[in-house]
Amino acid sequence: MMCGAPSAVQPATAETQDIADQVRSQLEEKENKKFPVFKAVSFKSQVVAGTNYFIKVECGAWEDLPGTGAGRKPPAQAWALWSQ
Image 1 (cartoon, rainbow, N blue to C red):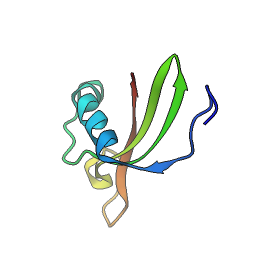
Image 2 (image 1 turned 90 degrees about the vertical axis):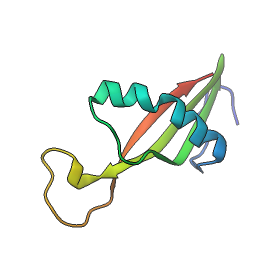
Image 3 (image 1 turned 90 degrees about the horizontal axis):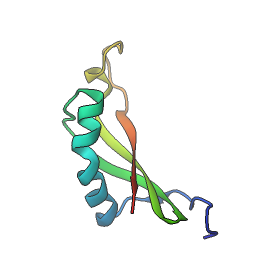
Image 4 (image 1 turned 45 degrees about the vertical axis):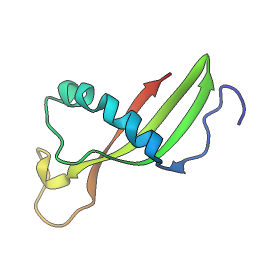
């Protein structure tokens, strides 16, 4: 991986789930919503003056979001960002 360039998307690991769990409450506060599910799906990392993690998170059903119709749809997803 080149310094400064993000990595390719990779499947989530136990480490990325742990990072996602650490930022869950901050995202819930920002969105003013409690997520019924918060499962890391995939991630990219970027090495700069530390490491940035871009984590794609499954966070519930589309039906739970305002302005969406009924019916079977893929889970809602969000990106969580964490820097170390």
